[in-house]
Length: 243
Image 1: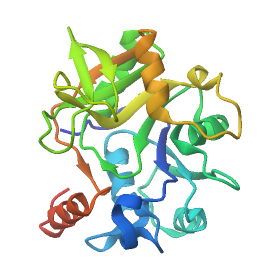
Image 2: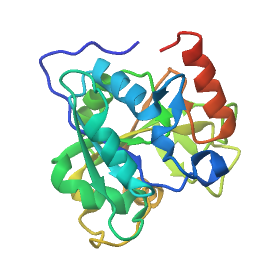
Image 3: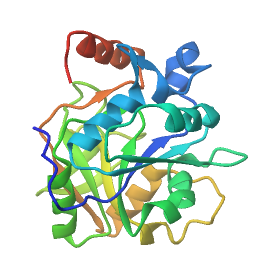
């Protein structure tokens, strides 16, 4: 269930929406993935409503591919009351997921959520933030016990801790999946050179190696529009009146 908003303000949410959406092919050639139509509305607007319902008040969209369309949408769409939207462009070249976050740090604050731009995650955002604060670590990754059902699992847990995270070299011991939502302190980006391309998965891997990546297992199933199957499923969900 989505947590109700309270007086406690959650940190900003960085939405990573700068990629080329290669898995979608021609579907996202002329329109950025985050603006694809989902039962009559742009995906980013539906994502924003979900975040606002969870208590989020500020979203920073990290845009790269077709960024001008994202900026236009931010200026013209009717966003949830009380939710502020800002767009930070990669610049003349794509910076990758971690590079885009490094560029957006001035807009994000000392700690912030990170959400993949193709993920629709009906989880308890306050519980995620509280788990991060309680951990005392530099970052937290939410995980879902996937067991290769919805996508290839990429996280190995032992005793409730992440001991291996690898999107490319998967092992049978990996039963969980990176859910698509994290919380990070700005200081973890300090060693990344400004303006250079860098990958968030590699940064998470480095945090695993130093024991600075906390985890929280969520029970709510994730939804995504990064694949044709995921896009069709979410469109059908909202066409049926889902949320």
